Length: 176
Image (tube, rainbow, N blue to C red):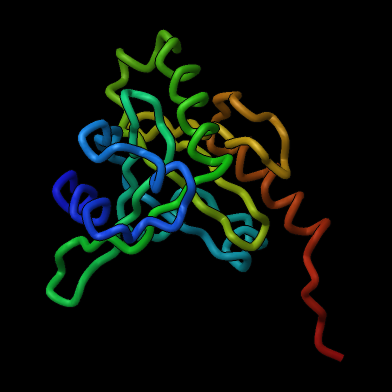
């Protein structure tokens, strides 16, 4: 990933201001985490983590140790992960902020959580997802339409709030 990042920098292919302004030798990647998505129908049906779909991987891009962007991969034609986009914006800082909060959770070290990201495009929700065999915790990323940014929520509570939001804002129409 780092070599691809440096190649993009050499070729001047970054469109975001922070990445364009960064010096290549200061850029690094950190915090790999798998990305999952969830559709509106699954949310409205009351689905939880079992209704999410893997979508790729995400990495934070740091400039001198400070997160400035993210890189996402998706499955390539031969099953390999290929860089699909670089992004800057509020979710990069929100991810870093949420990670600092969850690192202080006493249960984090004891349970062996796996870091993930959940994206629910239909309701503009992104959440840091801490997954273990015993428990799933979700931390809504700022800005969050359900609020509770930075709060580690049990999966049941998170998905209940998400379904309530989806029902309240859904533009779906019932057949006549």
